[in-house]
Length: 308
Image (tube, rainbow, N blue to C red; front, side, top):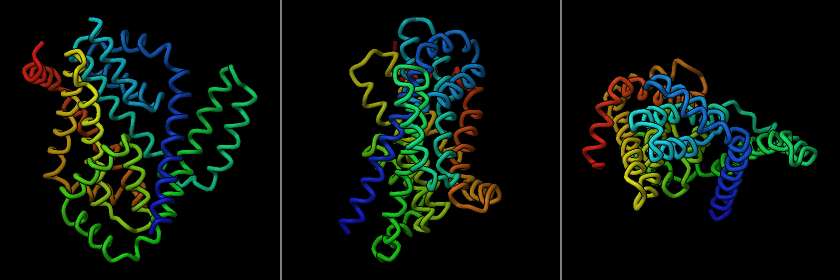
């Protein structure tokens, strides 16, 4: 049992390290332009949504995009409505990580890491060095998920775990709670979603349980941001509250049609891992498009909860 836990923890650590390295490389390349883009391409909620999605897909960090948006609001360069639209887009852009994991590139992970390290060493201090950092980080991310998957494989033979997973499959709310707790512990929704995909890959969890964990991770990652905003300026707290309300609203909208949503995902792919990745993308896009027309009213509610 200890070997399973150690292997899973090692895989998670490698995944998080790879994600951090990849994000750092992308952030350094996009950083100088980030605030400039946010200032100029957020005239209305729709362009703010697109801008947030593209920037987060490029930097692979919704936290960086959200922090930049909050900073611009605090500086008086953006309105709260614009920042909330950017965050809606950031929640879409962050789904790219799950799509990357779902394509079963684990066998190439070692060679991707080697290529990234070579490019990094040859181009140290140059743009090529940053590209190498991104490549190596992506390889570490894929390798980490492979280790998690291998470590979790023997768990299918433990009856206690089988009963626990069955509970998550039967109760969507149990899966949501599990996703929230795991995200709070790991401080990364991408890691939580990666673990749910690794569980699905080994047959330890089905589409229903996997999507419930994804929903929980969407809420859990905002709870972390909310705690981080305590004691900060009111604009930061307003943005964090808005993000939390959006994610809770998105889950509440999808839950009544959860079974229909699962059937749509089953039709999207024959692989449950791809289905979970597609579910993450579709749920975030759907939630954002539902909330976007009412962004002004969401901002009014946020200002009521956290007065200026």
